[in-house]
Amino acid sequence: MLTFSQRLKELAERGRGVVVLTGAGMSAESGVPTFRGKDGFWEKESVEDLATPWGFARDPAKVWRWYDERRRQIAACRPNAGHLSLAAYEARCGDLPLVTQNIDGLHAAAGSRRVLELHGNIFRVRCERDGLVTEDRRTPLPVIPPACSCGGLLRPDVVWFGETLPARVMEEATAAAESADLFLVIGTSSVVYPAAGLPAVAGAAGAWVVEINPEETPLSDQVDEVLRGKAAEVLPALLGGAP
Ligand code: BJW
Image 1 (cartoon, rainbow, N blue to C red):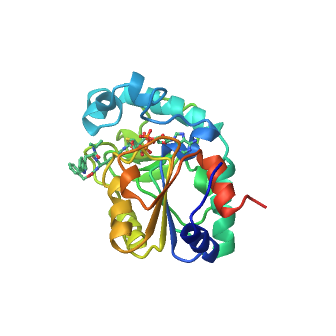
Image 2: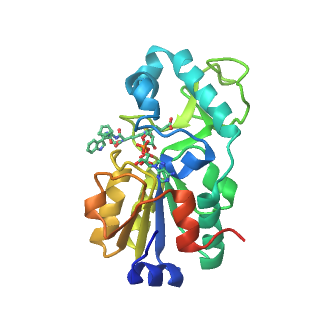
Image 3: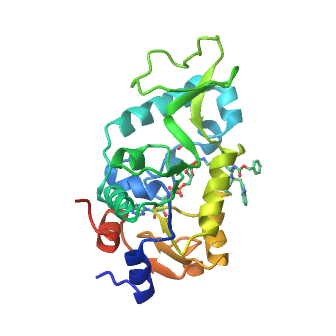
């Protein structure tokens, strides 16, 4: 049985200064696999081969086959009750900065309007030669690896290890964390930086920091409150469900 502190209930009810950070666990109940843990990608796949710029330079077709399969899988997924709860809460509050490490687009699909995608989006491609970014939702892609009209190699418009995050998005996420009264950290293992540093930014600026996760993480003993449960169950109970 989940219980919420009085402070959390008041802050959630007030609905001002609420900021959200999500990770792969947010989409787990939609059917999108996570990265770490026993069923996570990194149990069976090599991070170095698939999620680094040097892995892509070595074998773009291998990386693209993996992304093509993930695009196919994600295209079949729908927002879950947690995504829908956040979108409905934003509609009631008027503003809800939603910082996400997820590349699946499910927050926008649920109707969230202020989504800050720290690690890009799997349905965008970027040309390695001219830098042009375009949306491409085709699954499967007709040719692997895909090429730009300029002849350059296309890559997924996502952020791999060793690459910097989009500067403006990171600035906006940091500013949101600094001004938060309530900071909800949902479904992330909190090991990948700089995203994993945002709860500390919010906490240092005075926010009540709450972790929502069925498992313990390195962040668990640094937050003000822990809600041990799944996002699709905890969020409707805390913020209300979708209308
Ligand atoms: C549920 C649930 C349910 C399950 N409900 N919850 C400082 C210190 C140390 C290292 C670094 C540092 N600063 C930078 C680094 C290096 C590196 C890093 O952090 N390394 C650490 C791993 C050690 N960071 C970077 O390289 C970043 N760039 C950067 O910092 O640039 C500056 C720089 C450049 C060069 C040198 C130094 C600095 C870039 C990071 C990019 C991460 N990219 C990926 C792939 C994105 C594209 C794609 O999806 O293909 O992003 S890796 C992967 O991890 C993905 C995720 O967004 C990210 C985080 O994972 P997440 O979301 O936390 O998922 P999981 O699977 O780990 O956890 C799921 C959680 O959900 C679990 O806790 C479950 O319990 C929970 N859960 N079911 C709620 N139903």
